[in-house]
Length: 119
Image 1 (cartoon, one colour):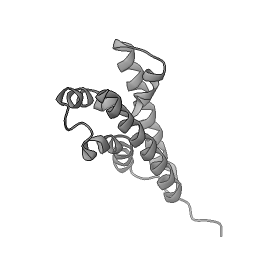
Image 2 (cartoon, helix red, strand yellow):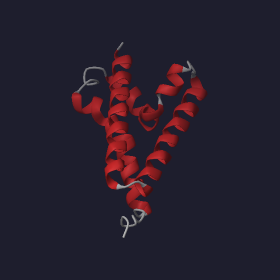
Image 3 (cartoon, one colour):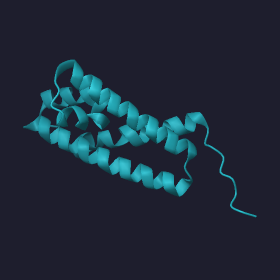
Image 4 (spheres, helix red, strand yellow):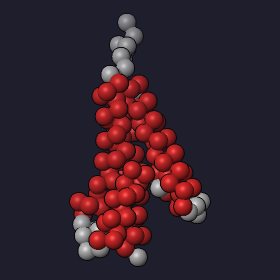
């Protein structure tokens, strides 16, 4: 008589939702044309694209070189795993709220990175 039991989403669908949530907002600077006039900035952004969702961690801790990539990759992986678990287990309304919050924050971060590259 209680609420209906929610079954977990299939793994492939959950991974697709998580990847779209994590890397989808990273396309925002490209769609807004923020890197249009600077080929060097566009090339650098493209090289960093895989770690753009987690790039705030190495920037704030002021790491360079290999540590920059390692920390950014670890933070991005943590975001992906967290969103995968959310997509797999959360009810639909909570998943949408989590995706919206994550998307907005990563979108803001990617726009800030694009502006920083332009400086």
